[in-house]
Image 1 (cartoon, rainbow, N blue to C red):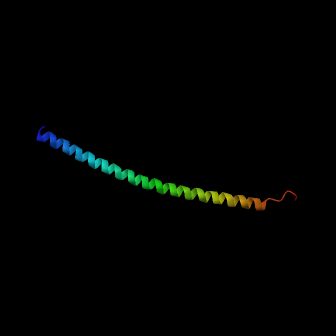
Image 2: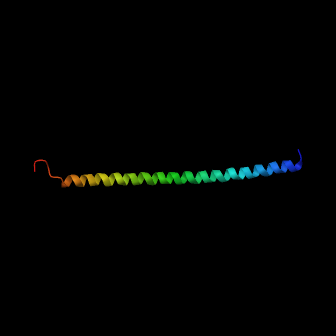
Image 3: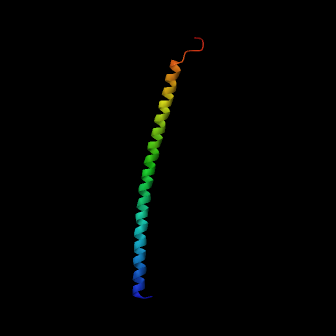
Amino acid sequence: MSDKKLMEIETTLAHQEKTIADLSDVINDQWKEIEALKRQLKMTNNKIEELESSAGQQDQSNVKPPHW
């Protein structure tokens, strides 16, 4: 194998290693963002459930008992 061919292979390999490292960083950043969004969604869902249950309680307090 000639030196030129070996140099091309080494250059290609170095570029591929860099690309893999960059992609790994992107995936890691996306994973962190997904986890943050999941936490935010869970908090939002909890807040909605609280509001719905408190709204349900308020509605019940305004309803006249059946004997009225």
